[in-house]
Image 1 (cartoon, rainbow, N blue to C red):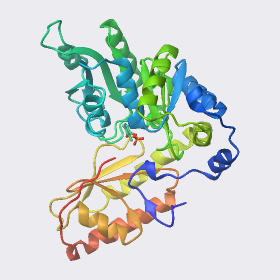
Image 2 (image 1 turned 90 degrees about the horizontal axis):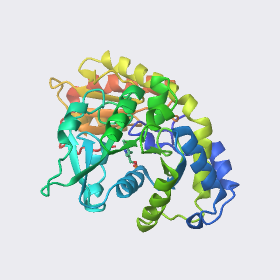
Image 3 (image 1 turned 180 degrees about the vertical axis):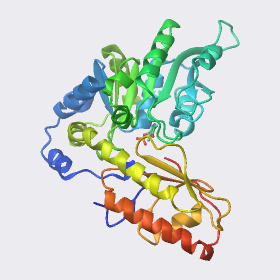
Image 4 (image 1 turned 180 degrees about the horizontal axis):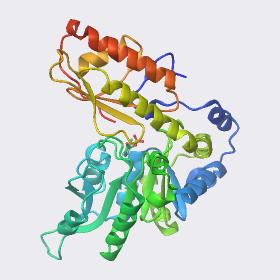
Length: 362
Ligand SMILES: *Cc1c(COP(=O)(O)O)cnc(C)c1O
């Protein structure tokens, strides 16, 4: 089931609402959410909090807004947040943590499994010295986008939460695709979020809702977060129209994510058989990154352009690296068609010339 007859693999953000979501949106009961009176938003927030293992939830415009509200609620200006150096929070949110929240990011190396080493974190925690910002927060990402969609384990999350709490620090989980992580690891989502002090997830990615994310935490945390959402322009009034799709997303979509993961494997295995193309990592969830061999006479930009002439879109993430993300609007047939197109594109590669790469992200 491709979108507008295009196999769009750039991201799972391109997913459009399902017919069931559109129906729920049309008939949603709504009210003024700034007064807390939108019954559909309230229901979504309760459902999300329950799934993620928290007391309360807050419907927000986007994952970026949810992360920013989380850092503004946990921290004061002049505080410091420890983040992975490959995270979306650090690399892909315009530095809002610094520019809007006034919080100093302290990037530490992300390991191939998406974690940061506890000894690195220990060494980065600031001492009591007037020269330093105050370490307040640790944030992790799950699944880890730039590390190939790797799922960070429940064991690590719990250990990190205990580590943070023993040192008076808070833990935030940027779980934009945490439902994919739960499906890959075969654990309840709450095992990947509940031990933390807050977590966000995106309704508008693999879960296919049109708009929104939910930030979850304790009742007190969410009460404070509600104020921050307003100043960031996130008081959305009759947002139940959007939340209605989110409820369907939570009810119907998590159980089908394994299909996307199987399709990602199928795509990666097929790519591995095309001479000159090499999948990166072991493709644990719905993302396939692959590299173009330096021996081939064209770059990623050219290959993407060539694919587009065959109605297939993929995302350039490096001069010779391409990302394809599987989602509910990409069928197994679409994957097979993509593999045939890649094969053709590579075989015809000598007719292509390399051109300046415009590298995209997320
Ligand atoms: C997409 C993404 C976000 C931001 O979500 P938006 O809704 O696009 O603002 C945050 N973190 C990660 C890991 C993401 O992949």
